[in-house]
Image (cartoon, rainbow, N blue to C red; front, side):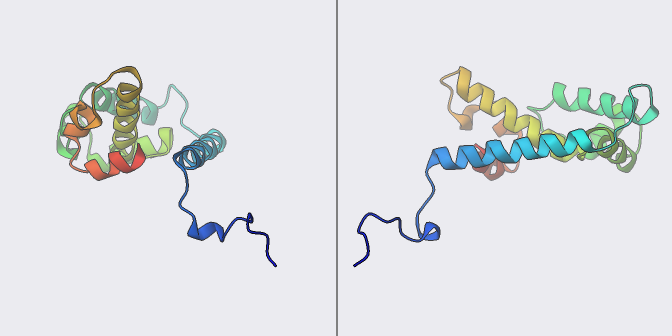
Length: 136
């Protein structure tokens, strides 16, 4: 007779919120480790300068809708070149960086305020709110 306290098939059990958090934390640690091993442009390079300008623009306007055209106009380079520079320096495209930054800002607001996530400027600017809610 099988023990009645044995755990059923792990796939049939829904994960707890803490399990999901641990999974996300581990995934972030893996990404951080991979990013450290990836070669990057040095601080004096042209790619670094352009990527920094793009990041400054994205961080200052993260709560607004941002297009590649607007980013290109602000940085004064073609969007493809900006994306290549950011990929070299940060390992992600401007859109990926912006999405990650918006998620981080929403997490901080949830931790430090009583404001619901739907009221967050980072979620209001995102046309992909489902991504934000899934990430949180």
